[in-house]
Image (cartoon, rainbow, N blue to C red; front, side):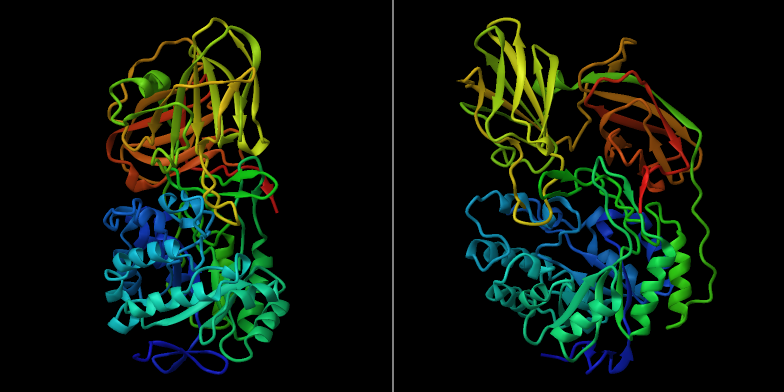
Length: 593
């Protein structure tokens, strides 16, 4: 095999034979509007970074097992790698197959995880076969961007923190060989949590560079890595400078001076580093992940992460503090730090058109086929990856009783009888039963289930969505279900009409227009609204929820256009509001240091 551009010595890296220290920052192309990639990469260089790192989400690039590779828009990875090269930055590429990243399903596609018997991230031939077929189509367009071919990619990761998941060395060897046999000549590395020697041992491969992930205890963490790997570069492949948020928590932050002091310790020790995150970005659309320890906990839309560069791409306190630290150990460009981007503010949007969701979901105007089944089926059995599913049947008897969902719901269910809301069940509360009053025999029961994000870490990856078992009323099983898929990928057929001034107490789409002179970044504020989704000019900004901590949604400037713009909200609960606001200030909620 040809010599890769990046090699290792007894205590460091060599790039084209010359000593080289990796000073990298993580930013994920799929969390940034593609028209802003060049801006973010330029700011990475100006902070003093010589490298950027990114994951590659399998579930977006190959949404169906037989579909062509998706490489456009947010997913135009070759263009992103080319822009990095143009900026003079190297790239650490982390193609997984598993990425975690607080991303839906940890990046594993739902069509793969639906198989209840498959052993994920193992040498199970069903998993490795699917991975091989994916790499067959993923790697050819990326090979021109490898350093061996004059491109920006100097190193490629094998799996991701595997030691925290399993110990199938044969599987890791398969991933290693799968990359090499398809033309990846660059340095390969693994990364594992430094807090456990077991993780480093279980996630490593002979002859492959081991790197560690940690956010503090610098000397102790580097010592653990050196004990595991007596020779070679010391590298923190994820230096955690912030953290992510779940709905219902406070917003996590880390003091800039504290993070900068630890970065200084890392660099003073001669280690290489990848700052996680340099720029976090946004979980646009339905892409957020979730954790599930004692209970299910979905991730918010913002992936701000209290990073060096804010969600909207402005240098934050850590940017300036890190630039000063890096300048003590490596050259930093003399160009001035960019000023914050201009922001739009003071724009009120009147949402004066409306369309109830349930009639739309069951009408012939939707393009999704209706499934007719004797028992409820899961979202995965319907072949749906994200969004909502509406289940519909009839209740055979009138009176008071208990509606029971065997196995619970995945992940949040709103229940309606003859169109009237009667209750909500949530996976995170382990809800399975709802008291119910049925007004008449044959009343219509509708259950709207929201997929709040696939688990991205641990053994529950691939947990099903939708109704997870039989549904009974007073012990009698309900049969004959019509199931309507609502992926909400196209809202052009929503039948908007002038809004009635009366308050709304059922899920509905709301539409309004607003004018912009010159597009600029802004934040969508939704006082009076409770829970739902937001789109501007067809671009899916993501989820909002007054549970917090996040109170605003980031709107990238390229989403807007001069003149008239469209805003659509899908509000799931009752609302008395009919307006939204565009503001110049993000609100990520109360702070949790």
